[in-house]
Image (cartoon, rainbow, N blue to C red):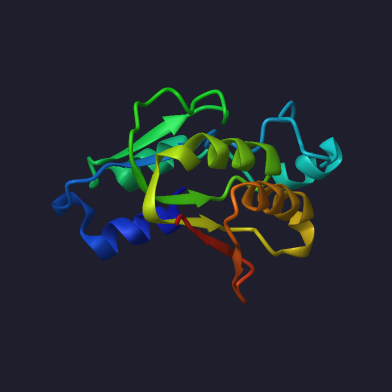
Length: 158
């Protein structure tokens, strides 16, 4: 439903900024055919018990924020649906490793110096595959991940 992104739009009064905000998601859970970076289909099915189709609700939530655009579909399939040259903030919260890794790899070259990458489920015990995928990527681009007490991770693009 975009709760964190809504909070950001409200806090920054996003309509006053010369920026765009894109939210890539299925808005209906994790596709069961999603490559899983070692995660079992049973685990994906368990996670999907908590998801319902929420696209219409998300669209209503973001209606007051015309600079925020919902991009519905499976990541990474939708990543080229919008021409995005520069990114200053990237939030990864798809609850499965493969699309998060794909989004990070896709947007990494577009991240401006000082850009923030927030990885929502980085350190949770049930999200080991996500942490392993992010750690491997981060080591490959020589970008340390700050592990927060909230379980989140942060990367600052240098």
